[in-house]
Length: 240
Length: 240
Image 1: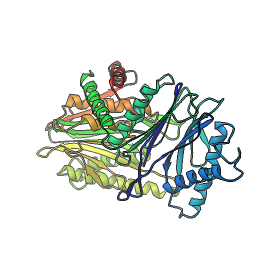
Image 2 (image 1 turned 135 degrees about the vertical axis):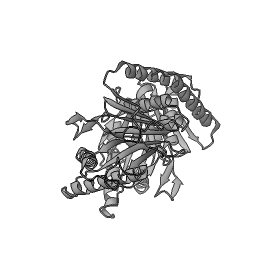
Image 3 (image 1 turned 135 degrees about the horizontal axis):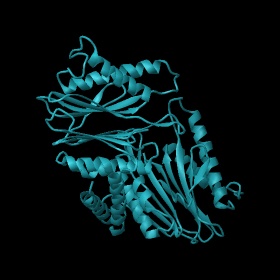
Image 4 (image 1 turned 45 degrees about the horizontal axis):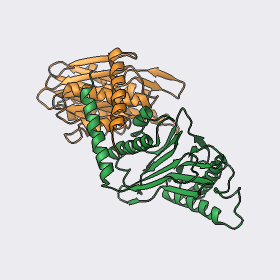
């Protein structure tokens, strides 16, 4: 499985993905699940993927091909599309087509499906964050629900429900996604280090910060230990 | 859906279930999901249920019928069975048979399935806690993994992973299951109040404490608010 989480805050987007991929319990590998596309200052798009690797890799490869193709224009290239809504729609179409083609090769009982989180901004537009479903339709993060999750989303949701609002700072947003991931890593083996963190500041129209957090990263380990201690201490202090 | 959690601590068993049942999003009702069977001083058994109500109600009714039947003996009645292992096996057989009969009436695409948590003690034996699968097979809580969950188990697992060990006291166990349920209630609408809490002290061979916690219970509301505050405070204090 996978866990990816994206926040749409007033100050920008904060995105975090793990890298664990498995075909059965005994075939585990590490693959990047965050992909960025940018024309700095004009357009930035980040995509996080969950689901069948054959579907997600082919989808991302096709988006790259469409950008590089001769005659690429606003109807084919996500870097030329005039709005983020059109970007989400192009990505959704590519995902749905890829999924259908792969599904056609399979038995009824086999499943090859995937979903994506797509975030970004075009110059002159607001930042937007979408969750694209396997069928290509999508939903968008709003002020009421400023975060979106794909994959193993349940373990890390209680914390997000409690601490994330649109007013959350980018630094606190970074902390929130890392702690949400930490709860997921702790409780589910199918989600694993290293992690990919991406921050896109509002109106930068470019990636502001990218970081790969490796297994054994001392800062992440210290945060994880401090959080575990704080939870145990809070637990001890609660009266019921 | 449902959330039920059981702890097997050195000092006894702590069991908590919600009561929400739904057939679709617009047909929501409240049903007790914890059922107790006892011969005080000799044998106590508690069962918590998750899944299709038609399967779980029929299973529980059949267990009652088998206890009350003329000629009930250790091969048919869970109150006469000589060991908790045999109790789990009888319950598993009843669940599997009921599920098969109901499934036979249904289309391929419809599903009627259920799983159970079964805890208890017979005089002269240790306390035991089992998770019974829809097929009637089961697993048991151990010192390594002293808790079992059925239904919507993911939201409330990170806390249990961090605070529950066999040495946890009954009071802390009670607090742990209530906070685990609180996280689940907060993040998933398909789990709902009121709650049923059951405590069985070691070697009592009887129910030690039963409590229904209603929506709006002031103690539960205060605990829930204190936990939310403690989490937000812990979050604020973490450095990363």
